[in-house]
Length: 327
Ligand code: FO1
Image 1 (tube, protein in one colour):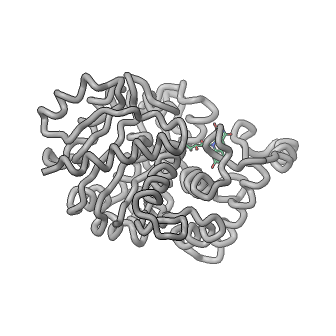
Image 2 (cartoon, rainbow, N blue to C red; image 1 turned 60 degrees about the vertical axis):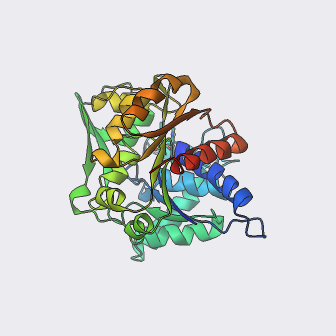
Image 3 (cartoon, rainbow, N blue to C red; image 1 turned 90 degrees about the horizontal axis):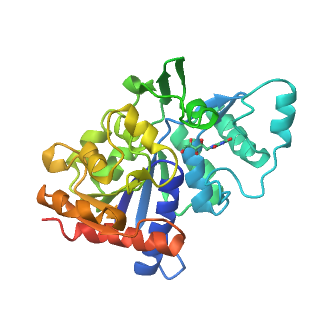
């Protein structure tokens, strides 16, 4: 069974961890793994050059989370981290003191930068780094070309990470620019992973700056609309608020209300020109189910808070079960 996931960082990584737990239980390979083949296409719009190294937040959160090394409370960065190098860099007055690059995390960025400078594309670099962490999935960047999310504010255009981390998305975003997207192509394997999937899953990642950025890579949206695989998504908004992060600030910037119905309609059903077939909402939004069902969505409500791996596996099971309801 081939599953393709379009993912951002923390939410997508936690969801994929639960999905793998479900698959290891349902489709065991007899060696503690699963016979299912999972490919994760990751957002790289958060990526940036800092201190001369390439930082790929969503790829690293996926790699660390699925590799068992993530700082669990943060959802990003490494467990048991230290910040001696960052502190000494600050003493030079260099860098972003509000964006912490831990010592162990820096090893990842140094390794990635070394391989990039050898001429390897990001997809090959990612595969090489993942060999160490054994994430249990094929981890693909959405593109090998640099596509950075920049945020248009009244005070000028800044990198997404400055808006997200320094300003905590409190500075109104007038829009998002995907710098470099016009010359970006899907990374090797991305279109094939969409075309040959048995099911495509969109986890509760940020629909604007994570999933939206992946969909913005030329060719990806069309491949998603064209695949024979059903496409099921989990709402990232519960009871009118994002589960985590500040997706509401992103949705407001593009004029989409922060509620489970508005986000579903923002993605759109494939039958109506959109990209999804099925939508799982939280029990808090159960009242939205009849209206969406009347519009033709395969839709259900369930507990969707990813409190731990078993709970997340149950969410993944409910999402996959929606596929059975499709015509
Ligand atoms: N998030 C923060 O809130 N504060 C940080 O200092 C920070 C540093 C950081 C370093 C490397 C990295 O890969 C991610 C980091 N993040 C930090 C998280 C990052 O902003 C988010 O993971 C994604 O960009 C949004 O999903």
